[in-house]
Image 1 (spheres, rainbow, N blue to C red):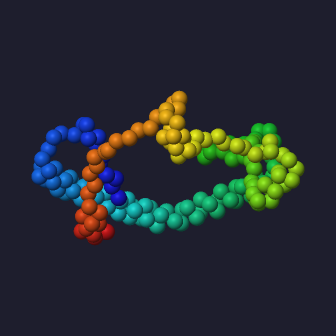
Image 2 (cartoon, rainbow, N blue to C red):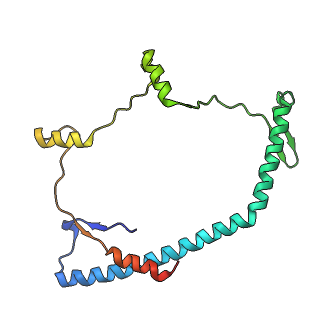
Image 3 (cartoon, one colour):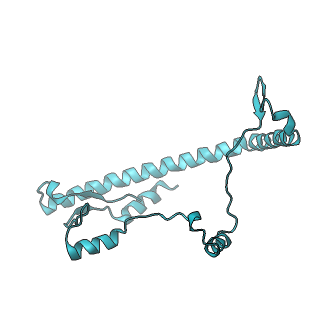
Length: 174
C-alpha cells in the first residue's frame, strides 16, 4: 500500500480547488500505474524464487547431507583438529573453529524468578528511554523543556483512494 504524499502548506503552490482536483486525478492515475508495475514485478520475483527452489531442491538436500556427513567426521575425530584446526584441500577446508560462548535462555520466567530471589539485579539490563508522551504532557503543562519543544500546525496531505489502488491490483490479475 502506498503512503500518502505529504507537503507543508507553506511550501504548496496557490492553486484553485479545481486545479487541485485535476492534479489529484493525475496523481491517482500515476499511483495506479506504479501499483500495477509493483504487483507485476513482485509476481515475477516470486515466480523466479519458486522456480529456483524447485530447480535446486535436490542439490540443496544433497548439500545438507554432505555437510552433515563432514560435520559427523569432525565431531568423531576431534583430536585430528587440534593443530592445525582445519584440514585444507584443493576444494576447500573443514575443521574446528573456536567460538565465543553463547547463551541459550530456555525458560526466561524461571530465570527471572531466580534472579529476583537471589537479589542479582546486576544480571538485569535496564534501558532508559525517553517517554515522548509524558514529555509532551509536561511541555504542554510547564512550557518548554531543554531539548524539547511542542510543534503544532496543520499539514496538507494527498492520499489516493484505496479502492483505485485495489482495482489497479485486480486489473493486473496476479
